[in-house]
Length: 301
Image 1 (tube, rainbow, N blue to C red):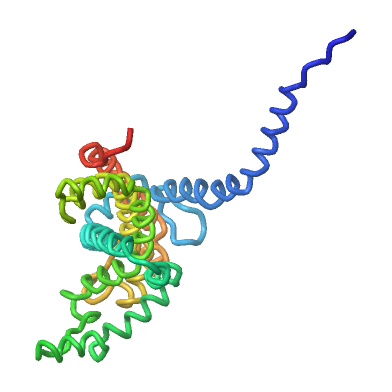
Image 2 (cartoon, one colour):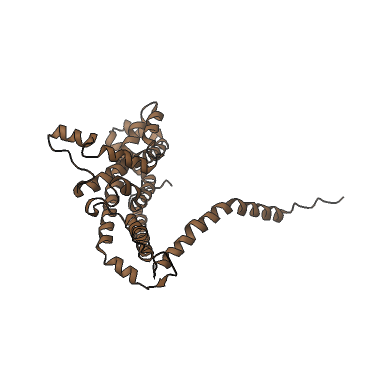
């Protein structure tokens, strides 16, 4: 009586591996063509002088030196960091408050749809809508003038208010996504833990500070990293809402600075150097966030 031969497991593994490479190939090709190759090309181009025609000419560190001494880049960095420093903490705090309020009511799906609508709307459309609301004769300006008895504020024409307008629209546009993510995190908090704290006499504020926020800290950390990176890449809102860089470059961001150098002035080498500087700033801020997460992020064991 002959025994049956064991199945050829190696053949199955090889076939599964081929199918695995087949399914990840579209994403891998897209990553190679639209991310890795452009990144390498932009990095190399930052060391050259090129106006879009002919062959690039090697310039060494000249572009980087010029950018570090360019006051417009300094203004763009300050504006971008201000947008991130204002919109990220305020946006996340508002999202947590709204998600906690929605978590305790019925029929919250309709509210989620309302909050999430700006997220799936084109930022250009959002900017054009708020452009009409924030005009000197718009609803918001006229309402403020009527309530306080002053002249209507020029949100988009006053250098002191233009950046505030960008921050306000940014917070409004990103609120829905943060609310949905935080609401999902709240629903994963065991109700028994909150009930036990309530029985022990913990009020709403104590439960928020001692239970909800610590258990939401991994999600808060993740959203803060994503929000900071998104804020550092602010462009379309500035380009449409306040018409390019706004009055006196009050809303000039780093990405707009890169666009202005490359597509308005045809200085692609300098523009690429500025993009490398943006990458370095993003990496530094992200690394600092990861270094600080050990102090306030609590992971479940």
